[in-house]
Image (cartoon, rainbow, N blue to C red; front, side, top):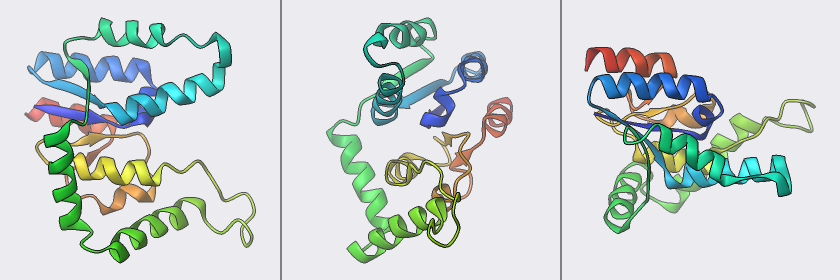
Length: 168
């Protein structure tokens, strides 16, 4: 059994360790898609500037190996993702509408509702939704609207993921 994790989970190292421990006890894995890993490293680099050391993150991941891995999006996986997303958003118009709706729900209307905006990972999150399957759900702390287009059982909170592991 495999769980994918969203960037929001990487903000919670204690909970990530707990998730890895539960997955390990069931013979499972926790996978960080390479794009998620890159996004989090970029966020940390912006936050810490020149003092940022990616070796610390690498060490954290190595401490949770082999349960926690970073998974590249290789050719076959990219093809599978494209086909899956193509089945969900069949036309350019469908894809643009999904991105527009995710942004609208995430950002609100700042002109009409000052202070309603928040960081929005909609495009990356829509790709992550494309990677998730009921047999390989994605775990997120972010309950933003961009996740609402996922099929049932494909997006889990940390607590739901822990329960999922208990029943697997």
